[in-house]
Length: 109
Image 1: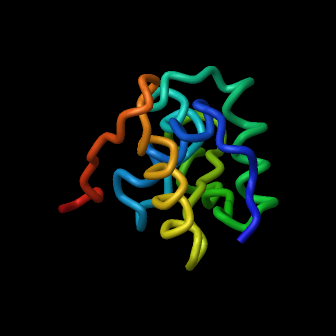
Image 2 (image 1 turned 45 degrees about the vertical axis):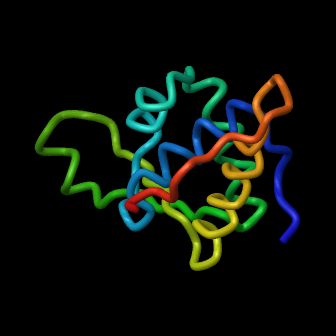
């Protein structure tokens, strides 16, 4: 599967989503967890969605109106997106800046 360029910022977003691949996350939560500003995050989410790695949906208006906050857009992996993201993160982390391989375990193991 062809995908977006795996910049450090894109890898940070994928790491957040891989923390619990089945759980949809909204943009501000992803921004906070990844340390990215929303102006950096949203173009990444758009590229990941165009590449077919993630999908998005808006929450039901009843879920946010009672709380007096803006409606949230939730992002989650497509069926094959999590596996592709995991491989991309592993490739990005496979070599440190000194060229030596590093070992990382799969999330949840």
